[in-house]
Image (tube, rainbow, N blue to C red; front, side, top):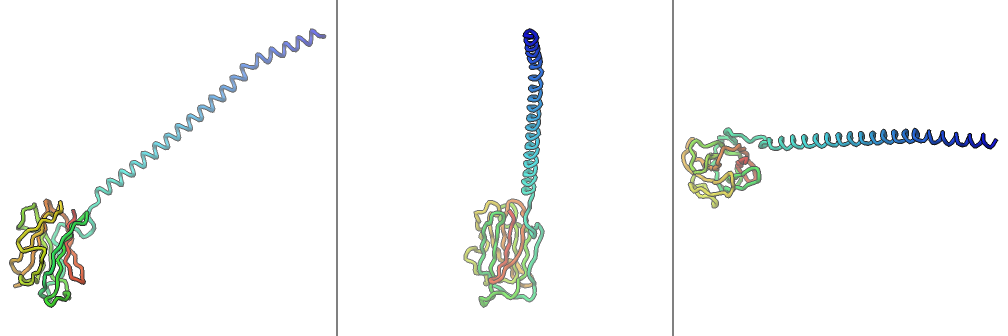
Length: 218
């Protein structure tokens, strides 16, 4: 009886020893599968991150390119522009000419009064274009022509006729005023702004007081 029990115990121990390697192999196989799944998930996450980053960089590049291509606002042209009316003719005084740089554009302003010192009742005929007969030395010129101002009615302390004045601007370098010629018996005032190359411009006006405004895009 004792021998039978001992033999059974020994047989049981042998079975346990024989089964142990197979149990270990199953655990290692599960661990390998789990590690592979984690590595695959990390790889997919990296791919998504790289794709998102590349898409963002492409979008930002397109925005930067679009910004670089942006031109001047509406109304800026290279062609001749006119404002005001030739009738009724009203003689005016030119009381001030001033200019300033505003980052993307340069502004020239001519302020006008009636002979009695009050504001004009209408906008005088004016035009701006590129001069065919440059009068100053810097590249090319935009001319602002204002009709209805006689020589004796020019009262500008900042600018003397036929004497160019440097502006300090890198693009619109000099301003010159001339008083010559006539149209329909009315002497015009010509204001010239010199630029190294042709730039688009816009001619407008403002009231109270009456101002003729020439903006040049830089």
